[in-house]
Image 1 (cartoon, rainbow, N blue to C red):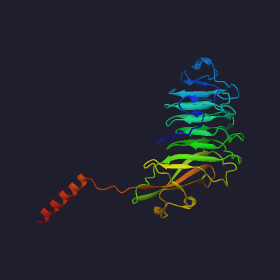
Image 2: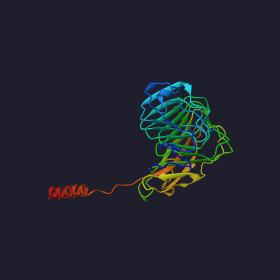
Image 3: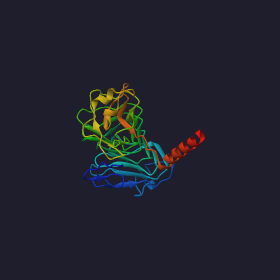
Image 4: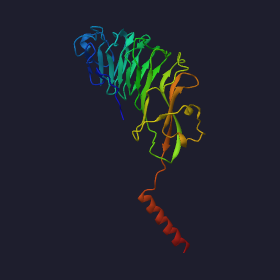
Amino acid sequence: MKKILLTSTCFFGIGLCLGSSGTWQWTGGEGDVDVSLGSNWDKGSAPSRANGQGPEIIFDNVGSITDTSHSFVDTSDGGSVTVRNNSFVTLKLGRWGGNLYIEEGSTLVNSGVATNLKDGIYNIFGAYHQTWDIKFDAGGGPQRFNLGSNGLVKTNSQIYYNSGLSYSITADVVANTASSTGLFSLEKRILISAGNQFNGWDNYTWNIDNNITDSATGNNLIWDDSLANLTDGSDLSSYQGKYHIGLDEAKQNLVLTYVKTDPIPEPSVAMLGLLGLGGIALRRRRK
């Protein structure tokens, strides 16, 4: 179940961001490109800011494109970057980043300097990879990550915590919470990964306004601190429908932990028929 985080001004992935400086869609070719050339954009000009607002930039079904030589303008303050329809885009984003929409099957690689994420809505169903530090601008609002069922945020360096901001996660998992019996397993999913330790996150708890949904039933899972200490050998039946988000021991990955139930399948009519025939054959053999 794919959920899109919305604000009063923007609907990401559709190209409607009323608070932006305008919408630019990539129309250039694949491979090594020049994002500063106006001829590569539908407007005939490169994306730009206006009235203190950032542009909304769309890469739709572009294949694989790379530009590590030319930097984008800042997309913060109402702007965004959308990558969809199996696109793989490598760019140097600006110093202050706006909202993100990355569709499942698509990837955005930011090879620029440490980008301060500011606007606070990150719909990442595919992958966002930043090669430098990820920081959160103090002038931003609540930072909300919607990671769907396969979304991943990754940096080769560090992720810095800003104590003046709040953070929340929305994600889908397959937990099968409707099954009261079955085989229970402890599942761990990396949501945000860093090449070095998270900086300043040691005492932060990600249980504020989180929304972790079992995509098999649509039910929301419930936060439980004790899941952080469970192992595969623990009795997991009482933790069905619960989750925890926290750093791993190396403090390099933000991990979602939950209990998955694999229902015991009921025998099909065909299987019951085969068992019956087997019983008849055995009875005749004994006679």
